[in-house]
Figure 1 (cartoon, rainbow, N blue to C red):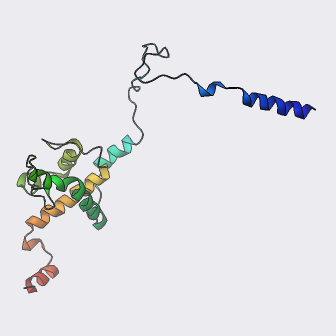
Figure 2: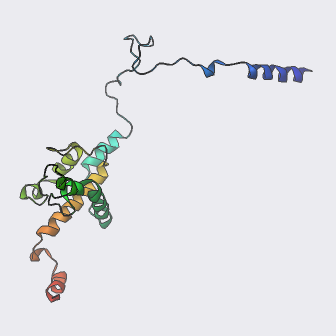
Figure 3: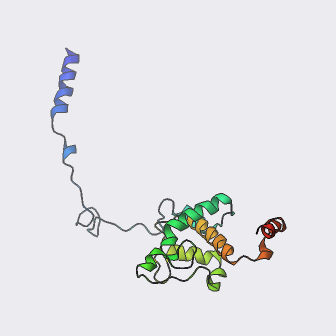
Length: 176
């Protein structure tokens, strides 16, 4: 009998409409009485850092070692994000330019060849001139990959015979 009464009580409790179906809530830009200023949407506490921001900030300052894998990743990202304006070789004649957008500088200009890597990272991060920021599209470690590939691209277009190792130079001189 006692067990039957307990089961009947549980069944009745399950049948009643709980307040979980219609909970009061505030929308971001409504006025509400929860905080003293009457606003629902509150500014973060001063000094608050979003999860992962510190790691991303460190990734921007740490230059990784240049490896074949990093260069391959850089080429892939360069082709996706940079080549529409700068073209695949970096001369600044990409598809976007052919459709009437402003002509970006050649990445082979002496000014950009002599610029330090951190400057190029900042340009990718913040934008420069008519180039907009890629900070929300390209992760910091991927920005370093793009810069590494860009340096390889610049070197490939401005390499001299003295830059080639002697063993490779002999192979090049034999080739007609």
